[in-house]
Image 1 (cartoon, one colour):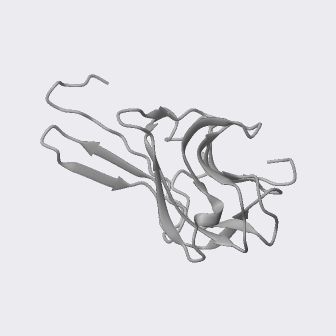
Image 2 (cartoon, rainbow, N blue to C red; image 1 turned 60 degrees about the horizontal axis):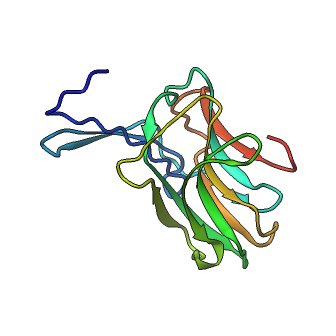
Length: 176
């Protein structure tokens, strides 16, 4: 795609797993600073999932035919809360299937999270972006806690925006 010097195109993908469930935004910014945001999926909160030592990653898994593949993202937004007294670092970003961090968007100390859902935004340093690839897992990682002390994340498991081409996945008891 050719970019005109008078127009700057920014694609923003914000994953929100919370009050509104999982959804993605595609934003375009023009030279006149007008920003148009198009919602790319439904936003219905349906199921709370927990992330802790036994289930360290909850993510949106991107397959080869997904419309997300090739898009650039710079922000991930989630709504999180703590349950019990979890300790450790919550990482938000893109993860490999071996649980390693591919691109970290940010982190937060688990003990500082509230006990009610709060929206948290994690962004790369401007103008850095990350180009989504097939096989990426975009989401949250928390390796501390246990089934009584964990980080909760609200998901939308009824409305997918990309069919089976990108979907909720999590690592549980050493397998996806």
